[in-house]
Image (tube, rainbow, N blue to C red):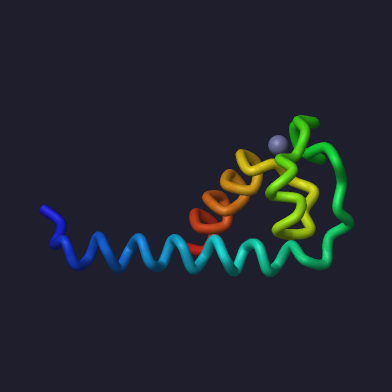
Length: 70
Ligand SMILES: [Zn+2]
């Protein structure tokens, strides 16, 4: 069973990696629609960061990056 402190640390790391992922996307050309699935990108998300991915695809990219990093 996982230690609660370990779980808290994991959550911090996940939040940090999400922020880093957002920073890394700042040099992309922003689009109205997701380049991966074609869904409309959330208005608040477009305002927050330059992105060409919807939140779902951005999460998927993040998960893939984590898997390949091992
Ligand atoms: Zn998408």
